[in-house]
Figure 1 (cartoon, rainbow, N blue to C red):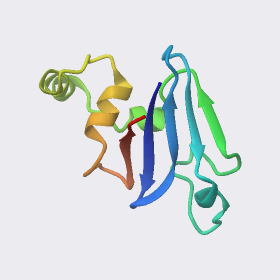
Figure 2 (tube, one colour):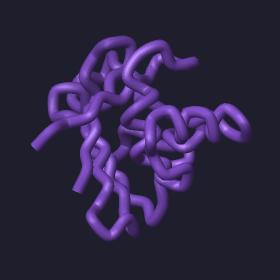
Figure 3 (cartoon, rainbow, N blue to C red):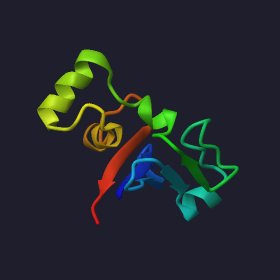
Figure 4 (cartoon, rainbow, N blue to C red):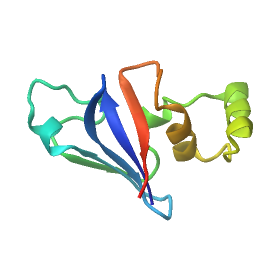
Length: 109
């Protein structure tokens, strides 16, 4: 099982988890972030109307943070990550300097 700490503008928002079979992904808002009505959801597709979200594939919001085409090929070769490993590429490339306000940092267990 792999996990990522998700931050929005540097504020810890929750945890994204990939189950070991890679057939389910969970995002859970942190209790403090979820309770603070002044903090927005990290995306429109992951609203704060519920604290936990589940999906059978990597949530489209996070998948859209990944590069495509030739850039993805270069990244996967350079980082030695299977080009089909979306979660692995997300963990390796979304820690800083992302296009939007959200970053993802690996959680080591």
